[in-house]
Length: 421
Ligand code: CTP
Ligand code: MG
Image (cartoon, rainbow, N blue to C red; front, side, top):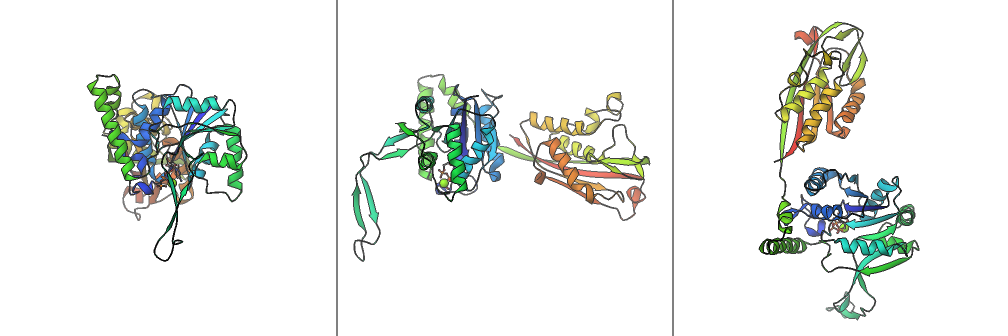
């Protein structure tokens, strides 16, 4: 492991219009901006690990953009996903912390909003790290620069002055660093009051690292405004058209990137097990001491069985009995977590994501409240989703019916999943 890449994609894209879908998930050339950026990094043979910093509010959009970028050619490339902070600086530091354990020698830090990054530019930045702590691509300023000093030219006019552009450059990303050097710089900035750095080269300069510039690329512009999004889309479409016309093999590549739509589905499940002699029950994976046990071929965990059925229902894959027949000796006394894990795998095979699950246990006793947190933790581990996506509730039936007479325990569950259409 020598080179890591961190792609920061945890911003809200306010200058590009913000709204429900930040700029890094807007479609250009038929695919989200982030997909283009991730693909560009996946192409680079020199990079050993990719970290993508995302906003927790847009986890699903990010997962889908990343999945569609890697699916066709790099299904086994598993980037590290980590949540960012409320500034770019904090997001980068989260990315650095996420990859520190892998002890990379170098790191490239890149804005997701720059999808037109090239392998050549990355190589130039990496090469420059042989002699410097850090390197960044930058382009000399071509326009004549003006500074406006508001209201200083009299009551009605602003004062305008020309700024000498000699020696002025516009900084781009990816910015490359010796990993330990930039980590220390970020740590020092986080520990001081310096929270307003807009790129990593500024933090490196502030911390006294040796820096150098490499020639940036005109195409490597950051998408910032709605006009930038339109221009990027137009550029990619014209590229695709050009490639098609010249029958280049790349045309397949460009049109391969298809925006994936998601559909949301809900499944429900219900299960009952009879109470019998015994001294404990297992509910949602938690063993609870009780006056009775639950009768069943497996461990009779009604909660997990109902939830397994809910997941199977959401993908139309039959029910728990069709996957794990009670007549099969293999499932005698089996722990039900394997049933649930199997249903989760089936969802994953369809490239689905579990959004939320909700389990209701129906019994007079034992009391569920004291065990609720442990149950949620168990389900979170098996389903590999955050605990705040899991609900476990309980109710009695006011002494009515089989549950009220304590002849059995019932459970109902629902599961909401997102599937690419
Ligand atoms: N970024 C981030 N975390 C933040 C802010 C920004 O990871 N808290 C990322 C953005 O997703 C983007 C890159 O840093 O890829 C450059 O930032 P910028 O262009 O400023 O993006 P936004 O902050 O999302 O946009 P805006 O400032 O217009 O809201
Ligand atoms: Mg910003």
